[in-house]
Structures are given as structure tokens and as C-alpha cells.
Length: 478
RNA sequence: GUCCCCGUCGUCUAGGGGUCUAGGACACCGGGUUUUCAUCCCGGCAACAGGGGUUCGAAUCCCCUCGGGGAUGCCA
Image (cartoon, rainbow, N blue to C red; front, side, top):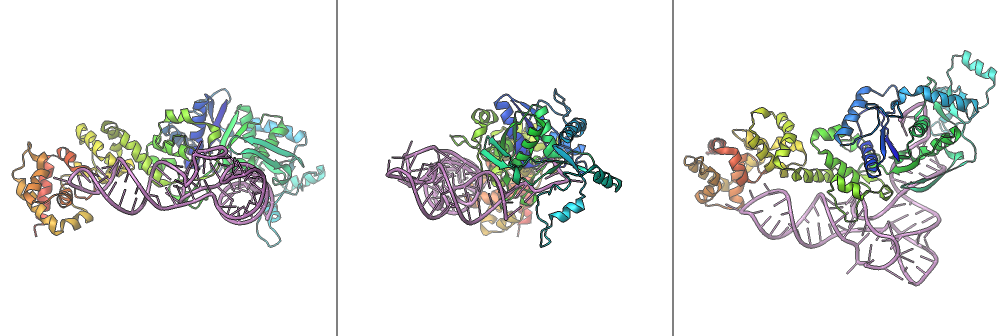
């Protein structure tokens, strides 16, 4: 069994493609299949080597490993379509000589006109087959005009195209309504996706094509080409699309869609993979958080759902937080570090004990790693200036007693007893519960939300604690 | 328009003729634990798109309607 993932390097790895890649990877692991990475870079204007690199980078970040690809070679290379033009040319020659394809001299403008309906609106159309039977003279005339022909595949009439999709079941098309003869080689000589995908999958001996549902309508064209060429037709599994909240294909207006942005925001790859896999699939037990190994055990290609799924950012966040919480502080520390740096702290000056400790304490408050930016100051700043919420609260009557009490206690605080600060504060202020803790939280951390105060105190240290008490004592003295 | 795919709580899903007064998770709303926000625990809200069949019995099988999506490119 051999599967493939075939991105086109025209931008960052999209979340929908990432899902396709993940499923292919799972399939390859589950069924011990080869995973071919093929770069579909025939859109010369939009393809870039930078995109190719960043896509591979994102795939690796997700933990996806392929067994053949442009970066590592393999027995079925080359793995960039732009390096396989000679191969395609052979097949085109064959199709042309057998009368299964023909040169078409219609220009883009002419085709555009044909596409316009009686009301002048641009609609879809079926190519008339105008250039199917040009004489040598007609061709020569076009050539002297300077026209460069495209190559069209001649669609055989009245042919049933049926295949058993692993997800959709039996799907049937009629060659009469797939849009007529379609272009397989552009006028500049570059072949087109629908054409070469068939050749590559056959030559690379791909046994199972697992791809997005948006390709389902292309499949009959591809099968027709395979038949004409006498090459192998793979098995298919068309994955339902991931869509936005309006059920349209996921795009930028729905939120962030490129994987690198998820990485930057601090999503864990395991969480993203878990979430992506859970769209359209679940186990009998209904487990949500599933380690990859367990996912592999339970996974079955044919058991994936058939309907498209809305990408739920909220649930992804919840899941990401669950993954963050699973990690101990010392493993989290290096993950949090880049974000702490971004918040303006020099990571090298922070003792590892403090770093590990704050990571452990703060993990419950972070849905994404970058959330640490809002909390790191609790442990790293000398003074935590109360934010608006905290400020408003500290102006409440009940807060005054706590601020006062804190100032009174300050002088008696020692390195030995300062971790009992909250108990002392309770006694001195005569307050408890919310009315004790919320002002205390505001004084100590400058905000109303955050880690457990008892556990935070030892990490904050006596020195910082005193500075914060003094700051609030002065600020709210009135 | 045409062809193709899809249709269970707001969302992701379980279910594949009787065990379904339809289960779980996210979100939301209550309550509890925590001398504190959060966490955590408990509870609640909430769905078989509609209509016809088939059957003793339909969320489940069939048909139609409606709804959504995809394709219809010298993009992939």
C-alpha cells in the first residue's frame, strides 16, 4: 500500500491540507504504507521554493514523516512535478498520436466569449469540440497567426465512470456531463493538474489516493485519462471538507487558516493533530483527548464521516489547554520561553527553578502558549501595576482594609515567614473569602486572574512582594 | 443552470431496524469544592431537515422535496 500527500507550494500549509496530510500519515502508519510527498508546482507563477520549504517545515512540526519526497529522494522520483515535464510529454505524444487528444487553437478570449450566456453573464459551458477536427491547412493558418495551441483530451461519449470510494461508496458519472473536452496541456507547454496527477499516481505506484472532497468531481476526468493511457487507477477516499462557521470552504475570513500561525500562537502540534483527526471521526468510547498511538490503534479509513465539519476554534483551544496541562513544568518551560522572551524578558537571566515553577503554575491559565505573556510578569516583574479591573476593585471599600493590613504587615515580613502572608493578612484585616483574596490577588499580581496565590508566593519571593505592597500602599493611600 | 457529494443538539460526533423517553465532548446556564479568579466535580439546556413509503416496529432501509456544499479554470 502506498499513499501520498501532494501540496502545491503556493503559500503556507493550509489547515485543510494539514488535515489531509495528517490522515494520510495516519493511514501510512496504521497500514504500514509508504507515504510519498509530491510537490505539485505546475502553477509556475504562484509556486515558490520558499512555500515548499515552509510547507515541509510545518508538516514536520506536526510530526508527519514521509518516506519519499523531494528532500530525500526515493525510487519513484523526481518528486517535483516541474522536474517531470519530460515524462508527461511522452504521454502527451502518445495521446495525440492515438487520436485521444488534439491541439486546440482557441484563445482565452474566444473561450471567454463562448462561456457567456445569452444574457451576457459568464457561466460554465461545455467545450464545443470546435478544434477537434481541424485540417492541416486550418492548423497552419492558426500557426502563422502566431497562435500556440493547447492540448485537449477528447472525452469519449456515453461512457460510464464508476468507482467505489472508501468514504462515499459507489460514485457514478457519465462522460457526457463532465464539461466536454478539457485542456491537459497549456499553450505554454505546461501540463495541467488533472492530467499529470493521474500519471504521477500511477508511476509512483500510489495505491490509495486520500484527498479532499473538492477533488471528487475531478475524479471522472482522471479516470478517463488513466483509461486512455492504459495506466492504473488507484483506490480513492475523498475526505469531507473542513468548513467555516457559514459552512463554506474554510478561508481567511473565518479566522486563521495557515498552520504556521497556529504554531506561532502556541498551539501544540499534538493538540492540532488530535483535533484535526477528531473532525469526522470518533471512537466508540468517544475519547476526545487521544495520544497518537491510541489514535492509530482505533483508526480505520473507512470509518471516517461523510459530511463536512465546521472548524471550531473554541474546541481546539480547549483541547490545546488540555495538552498543555498534561505536561510538567520542566517540559513546558522551553515551550513557554520564546513567548516570555517576546514579552520582553531575557530568558537567560531567569533561574531554571523559577522558570519551571512558573510554567507549572501558569499552565492552567494558558489555552495557547502565547497566553503566558499576560501572566509571566507576576513572577518576573518587581512591581505589578494593577490593570483596570484590579484597579477598580482596589478602590472598593472592602479592599482598603486589606491594603492597609498589607502595609502594616510588611515590616514584619521575613524570608522565613512571608509565605504565610495570606494568613497574616486575614488576621490583620479581619476579612476572608473573596473580600480577602481578590484584593490580595490584585496587590500581589496586579490582576484579578491568575495562578493559585499560596503556590505563587514562594516563587514571587519576599523582595518582590514587599515592592508590590509598597506600591499599592502608596497608590491607594487616599 | 448542470453534474456530484452531504444532512442527528449552536458545534464536533455515537448510533447501521427493536437495548433511543437518542449517548459523549466543546460552548452556554445553574450548583458544589477551593478562606480566591481559574481548575476540578455535579446538574441543566439542547438534535434525528420535511413528506411519503417498506416493516409488527424506522434516527437507522427506499423514494421525493427542501437545505447546504463542491465541481463546472490555459488553479491545484
